[in-house]
Length: 445
Ligand SMILES: Cc1ncc(COP(=O)(O)O)c(C=O)c1O
Image 1 (cartoon, rainbow, N blue to C red):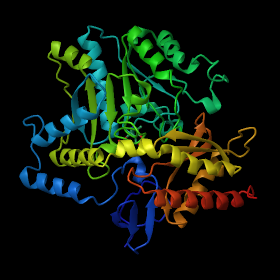
Image 2: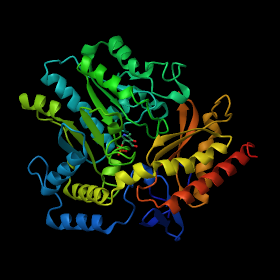
Image 3: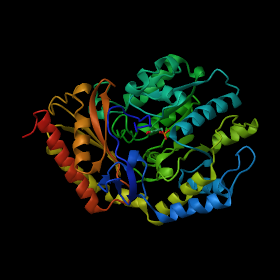
Image 4: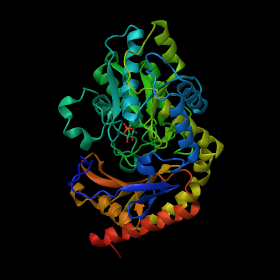
């Protein structure tokens, strides 16, 4: 029988994932794959944790679905409490949805509602950043600066401005930190002035980059300046923590590394660790109280918003994260892991290694000295990923690192529970995969 599934990628045979346990996924033939990217930056506590599946079963038995327009559930309330207990100070409420794109759609609408409540009906634009990704739905994609994913759908996208990324390895302004004086942060003010502050509702960015830019970490003063600009123009700051939230970078939220508090935080992935489709928007009291003053119902949402089984999964995951000290573990193991990954610098194709905690990006180059990227159609990153797969490891690559049109990078995001032995194995497979791909393009020694 022909394969009835319309798969994400054409022209490849999909292995059937039959079972998963800890940091390994097993296919139908019993072959084990080390999950070095947590599925897709999702799995934080590992696969097959019984207490999470038990919590979901228990919730399903009690009440599997009341509509959020009519009821709340203890599961929805408890998830909100758990999320707020990890969130920066001043965060007041949580709106649970089914994933990261939905969370960003809701955040965009909340920003608009906030501006309406302040009597500023002309404010609607969301400023995004190039080399960013906020989701596949059209609002989130409009805010995203991922050229490859935007291109086919450009006619549907909203007129949202984008600013340059804080990408020091290839500074868009050809400057160097710190003498650059944070031109990348000041670019927000440039965009605001160009489009008119009275048309702008919010600025959205990933506090530490993800798939699109290969885990770019901004300079430490970046968010202080961004916060100042947002406050000055009364523009909301939305940080997209869909990848970075709940410990991935060694802090509860990546923005914690920078000591600023955003107005809205969007999350997904690590919130449910893959046990259920779940995302959330965490809302600052400043926004809540403004909306409350105008009886600000959101008038948006989804049938499955606050789904109790997903919320029960999220709560059980966060309890596990806390009980096993996984945020602290990611922070503690970072220097050791970076030392290990740092050994990849001996490869002629490794240009830059970046990221934080258990989120690692490796930018690939055709020439180390000049930083010349591979052309996209060389698909060098994909070659590395294919060799890793053949060696029994799942990882990711993305192309378009350089201005959306050239270059590529590798991504690693092992579950936060990955042992030192498995992290060592991850690096050894990566090393072998890089060597094999380099030989393919005649760059090997
Ligand atoms: C930073 C970021 N935001 C949002 C999303 C969209 O999340 P989802 O795919 O769950 O809709 C993603 C997905 O990769 C992401 O990486």
